[in-house]
Picture 1: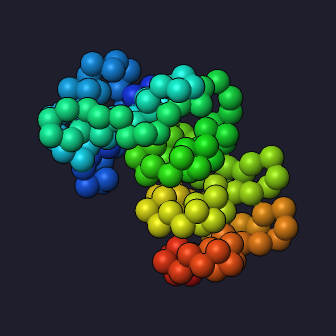
Picture 2 (picture 1 turned 45 degrees about the vertical axis):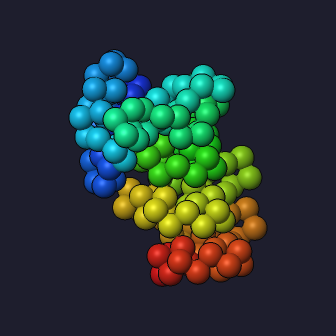
Picture 3 (picture 1 turned 180 degrees about the vertical axis):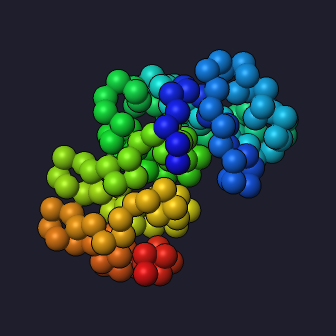
Length: 161
């Protein structure tokens, strides 16, 4: 992924394209042009405000992912929080914005550990494609694959080799 400093990102319905915008009106227009399934992400959403809105029936609707004052802390925290929220477009936006796919939390857990623990196959694939290390160990010495296996997330464990 490339470093970009935009606030708003639009992800195409098929998830292959993600483009940054500085103005919400431009992002909204592109999302609506893509049509159903496109997602507009605000990477600096304040707490309790929508981070992601998806085009459904020609309108942008809140996906249920609320902000956490993103952009006010470090990019590692933002990426891990996006993974915790579980919406692939939000994770994709933070990766596009330049978050390190090998970001770690305060306890040594890497972004890939978080995705594996939650069974997020699409997010796991995004992280791997962005260069996340599948052999990374957390504070307990576990790899993301071991975490996925221990939690019964077979599809994610298979992705991790």
